[in-house]
Length: 129
Image 1: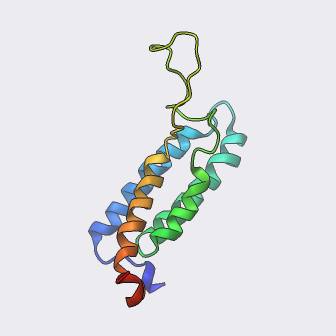
Image 2: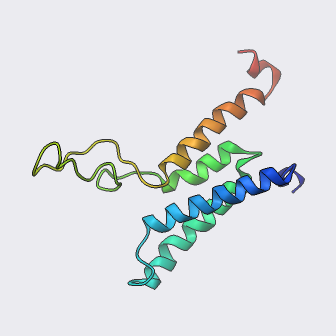
């Protein structure tokens, strides 16, 4: 449990802001809480719990946070705000590009942190390779 503690207040504030931003984007991905509160609770609340655990373990174990955030990624090309429509370019065509969801920047961020922090850690023989 000591490993999950933050070293200073700056890290605590940073992680709280990260969780808040991630939570807002996760809520935007789910059903409307006013029209379908049960669906919102069944879809969004487990995603929030997953995000909370990812942010909690993300500082000491960024690879674990990345693995926890992967289910929130774009796995269907019919989803996402960047896949939907390029009607301004090609009218009446549904052009698919790279599927981006609101959580995609967070997944990319933890992938970056994993590569950055994993390069410093590990056994000596691993670092020299």
